[in-house]
Length: 255
Length: 295
Ligand SMILES: Nc1ncnc2c1ncn2[C@@H]1O[C@H](COP(=O)(O)OP(=O)(O)OP(=O)(O)O)[C@@H](O)[C@H]1O
Ligand SMILES: [Mg+2]
Image (cartoon, rainbow over all chains, first blue to last red; front, side):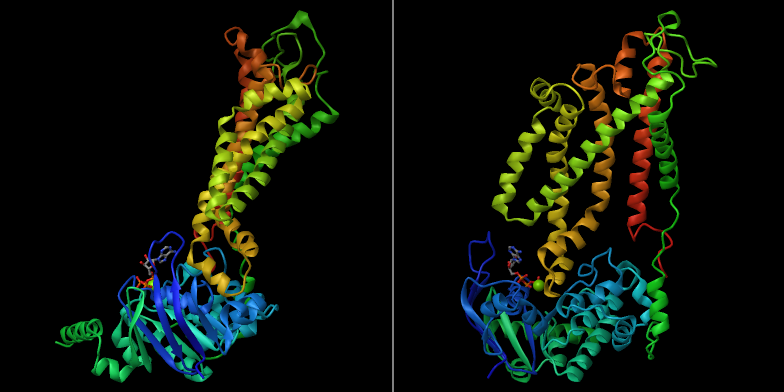
C-alpha cells in the first residue's frame, strides 16, 4: 500500500476565488523519491503543505501510512511532525535571524522529543552534513546559503522523519553549490531510507534524483509516471513542452 | 569545502557555544546608563535629603539667580529650585515609568494577540484602537480628574489610555510580517505552538521597534504630565513635578530664564539618557549589527 495518498483534493486559500489545488489525486510509495514539477504558481508548494499537514484541504482526503491526516493531526500532531519534515526554498528565510545555529538545529528535538540535545549530538549532525561543528555558535547571517541549507537538512533529519518534503531546496543557491546540496540529499536519502518528495522546476534535477515524476499545471496533476517514461515519452502536451524546453537549455549549455 | 571537518570535535562545538557572550561594548548604552543613573540617584537622594526645605517659602529672596547658596537659584515664591527639582523628579519619573510600563505591557500583548488572530478580529482591533488613539489624553485626563479627582492616578490612567492603543498599533504590523515569514512556518513543522512562536520568535524580532516605542513613550509621558500639571489636573500642591515647575516658570521666562531652563535641562537629560539606553539595547540585541559577531 502506498505511504502517502491523496484523493480528490480541492483547496483554496482564504481570499482566492478559484481552487488553487483542483481535484488532485496521487500516491507515493514508501522509500521512493518523487519529483513534483510544474511552472511557477502551479500549486507545487501548496500540495506539499497539504500532504505534510501544514494546510488542510477543503475537500478530499489525505492518508499517510493508512491513517487519515486530519485525524492524525488532531490526535497526535507531534507524531505527525516527526513523520514528515520540510526543507524550504530559501535557507535565509527559514532560519530565525536571532537564533544561533545551535539553537535552531536543536529546535525539532526540543519541541518534538522534549529533550535538549548536547553539543556532541549537534556536532555530529553538523559533521554529517559536511560542516564544522564550530559553526554552531554563529548566527544564520554568518553562513553562506549553501552552508545554511545543509544545516536546514540536518535540522529536518535530526528527529528521524520517514518522509522529507523539499520545496525547491536548491533554487536559491549558486549553481556550483546546488550539486553539492543535491548530492548530500541523495546520500541522506539512501542512508536513512527516506521517502523524498522533491519540488523543483528543474527537469534535470528530477532526472537525476527521482524515480517518479508528477507534473502539475494550474492546480491539477496533468501527468504522472516513472522518470524514464516521462522524460523520454511525455504524453501531455504541457509535459512535452517542458521536456523540449529542458533539452533546448541543456543543448545551449553544452554548445 | 573548507568548512567540512570529518571528525566530530565536541570540544570545538562547546567552545563555539560558550563563545556567545559577544556583547560588544556599546558607547550609547554606557552614556545612557550614566545620564539615567544620575537622575535616578538624585531622585533616590531626594527622599532623604534636599539642600533646603523644598516647600520653604522665602518671599524676600524670590527669583534669585543661581549663586553659591542656591545653586539653581530660587523660584517665584523664593523656594530653592534645586530642592524643588530633586523632589519633582519623584513624581515625574513615577508617572513616566508607570504609564510607559502599562502602555508597553498591555499594548504589546494586545498587538501580538491581534497579529496572531484572524483577519476578522484584526479588523475589530483596528477600529477599537483607532478610537483609543483619536481620544486626546488631555480630554480623558480632565474627565478622570472630575471622577477620580486630580493627581497622579488620573494622570497615569489618562496617559496609559493613549499609550496602549498606540503601542498595539505600532506592534501589530511588524508582528504580522514576522508571522508570515518562512522561519515561522519552519518552527511549526518542528512542532512549536503559536504561543511559543510569538514569544520566542516574534517578540525578539520586533524587539528594536518595541524599544524605540518605549523610549518615545517615556519622553511623551514626561511632556504630557507637564501639560496636565499646567491645566491643574496633574501634581497638586505641595507635590511638584518638573512639568509643574516649568509651567510655573512660563510667565517669568524673560525675567528669570534659569527658572525654566534648569528643569527643562533635567527633562532633556532624562529623555536623552533613556533614548540612549534604548538605542544601545537595540544595537546590542541585534546579531547582525554587533560588528564583532561570533566567529
Ligand atoms: N498564502 C497564500 N494566499 C493566497 N494565495 C496563495 C498563497 N500562497 C500561494 N498562493 C497562490 O496559490 C497558487 C499556487 O501557489 P504555489 O506557491 O503552490 O505555487 P508553486 O507551484 O509553488 O510556485 P513557485 O514555483 O513559484 O514556487 C498561486 O497562484 C499563488 O498565487
Ligand atoms: Mg513554490
